[in-house]
Image (cartoon, rainbow over all chains, first blue to last red; front, side, top):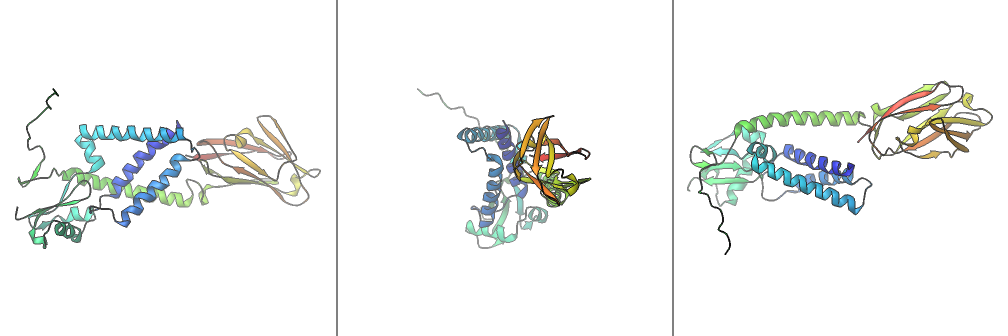
Length: 147
Length: 177
């Protein structure tokens, strides 16, 4: 019973913490994100397992997390509000030659991050970018002016 | 023959920016979320600060200390689930009678607080009166007995200690999950 509750709490707490830590741009995780994800995952693991190293405990906890994951995915599909809370919303960083300063600052994103995404799309200057959008998965989408 | 899949015509359900790029941005929600995030960061910082001070155990504010005549007890007021700690009981020479120290501890020390080991080993132990009575051989001078604790469940637990000729010592320990 306690192990199941620990797993459920740990899952919700990790989702909440990672959500608050925020999105970082880039298609692949940098060492910075690797450390964050593996470290907090490892720390939570010790509290989840405790001294109950049985297969029964592991299976029970895995099934708990599977059910919770399914439940959250179900809620996300049915409630746009809940989906915004778990995943956030796409954010416009640049539109028609204007930066959205507040969005950039609060999302901790720099113009270098946007330019990196623009280069990835084959653009050589920020002036060629009509829209830059921070997606819910942390990637920056670029809509060029010559579309 | 397999059933035909259900189809629905595509509509522009995702809100657009300047009526030309479908993004689905909800800036009002995001502004509220940023305000919420700032509150969460402050809460995280406060929790870490309180943790450093020992409010949740293993720090300055978690230390318990009771002095009752010739008996002095040092323990953790706030324990953590499954985490070892030491309760130390010091005896002044006045607590030693005929080369022994008698100590009665409530059942909660053995059960709820998870006593794993007593250092030194008592000469004898007797159960009764909702607790356990121990007799330790002692020479003159100040002497100490250590209880190695490791609570197995969270909660608030009261405990009591008794030494002949000394008022009963009572306190409580909070075991954090």
